[in-house]
Image (tube, rainbow, N blue to C red; front, side, top):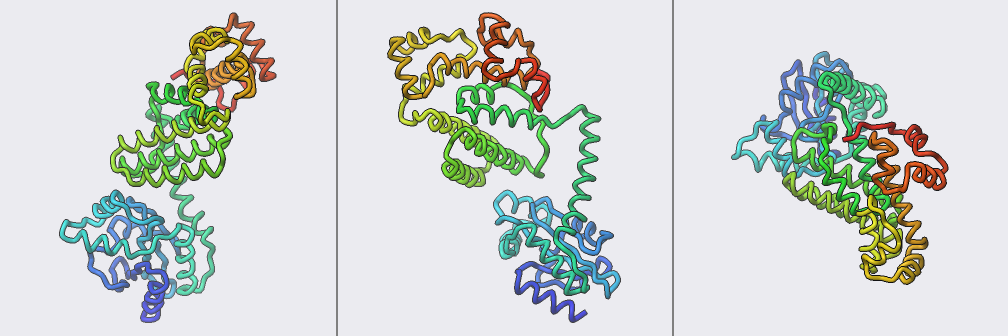
Length: 399
């Protein structure tokens, strides 16, 4: 017994992770010395002590981990390690932790100090500590990958099965993949106007739950959206370094926000900025306000019967001047640019709605469905019907 306690003290000296020794659910040792206030909460303690695995771990509601190692030489004895967080504790996570530990107002300062003294570390490093303890205490080798598969996959699979069953019973399905792809479509093409119209459309997003509170869930969703937008912008020809620098700045700012509304509004502005920068990078018009306005006008009116004459008149240019200037700055004729925008919108409608091809043709102001099909096949080497069939998404019910 004394030998194990010495090992746990040495473990703390090298890792700063609190350790506990239990004998049939009764705590016999803890290091560092602490009050019951910071002992593992009962809900996590019970799960770990009753685990059938030699080494086990779990995640908590406040985004930290606890681990447990059975002592093979002492039946009924279990070493507990934790809690360890992957990131420093923020205001929201501290609030959740206080609730889990049932911390009163007068104890908050000491409780926060205890948590903040524990060095944050990645999950892999924490699991490596667990298997190291297991080796030194029980003399048995194990890889952290074994532990990862043994514990988390079982837990995840059980939870996934439960959620799938519940969702089917309630006719509720996660549709975030379709929403993500539509969002990325507009960013990759630098279509800020289309992105704005898309985000303003009423639709019901059925997304998976990734956190136990609204603030963290909203932050997680926004972080995922910005990560997707970053890669869509890079595909849209935004410089990789610029894209990732923007991403880092946005993610840092999101973590500082404290209301769902402020997080969502900031996330939308970040998406708009990505689309705006892709447009400027793709067409080399970062400093050309008039050309940006013209392109945005075309995006915004892609469903109208746009012609070179009409656009030139709208912006007060002669047809010849606008055609020459546009070709020089964008690298393609204005007529071809208008047609490309219409065809990209057609692809989007074919993939994400079940609108008939005739209705899509009319919406984009082609002279006839036959004309639309001819232009589409000439540009993409596939008919609209076959494009829809071959889409990896299939035909989706129009939202």
